[in-house]
Figure (cartoon, rainbow, N blue to C red):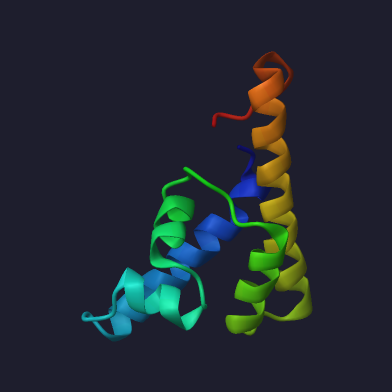
Length: 99
């Protein structure tokens, strides 16, 4: 998975880390609830086992109140990750993705 595809994962991890630093009792489950995503889905995304759909990514970006440029980069990185995974499943030799 390229650096662009990882942007949204790094963004989410950074956001979660920041919230935990402010409140040590803050949890992944609380974060998932705040961004309106199932906690198990968020866990799988953060562990690079699954990608958000584009619709979910847009919703998460809205919940995080991202500015237009960051939202665009966030959603595009989800799309890139999904495309990379699709290519890897069909022809792993044609991509440098590591799914």
